[in-house]
Length: 76
Image (cartoon, rainbow, N blue to C red; front, top):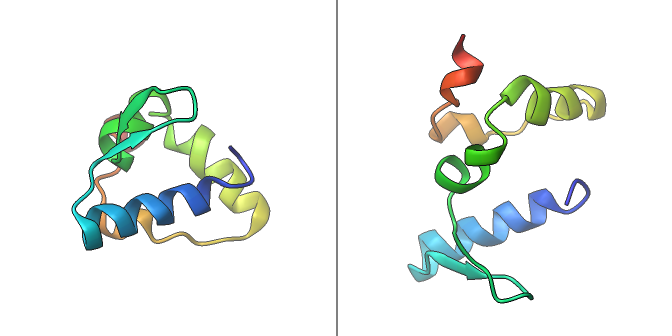
């Protein structure tokens, strides 16, 4: 997931915005709501640990939080 999360998030974004599709079904048949703030952040609420640490290390500046709300835990 670490390596391909940007591909997944970009695919989800395109499917939600362009096609109106909001449910992802995994290869194991599990369904997920395609939402950064309502799915990913449910488990990965510590933005400093799950986002910033790797993005800083890789020197990338994602624009996710330009539109999405920063998780409450990260605002503390």
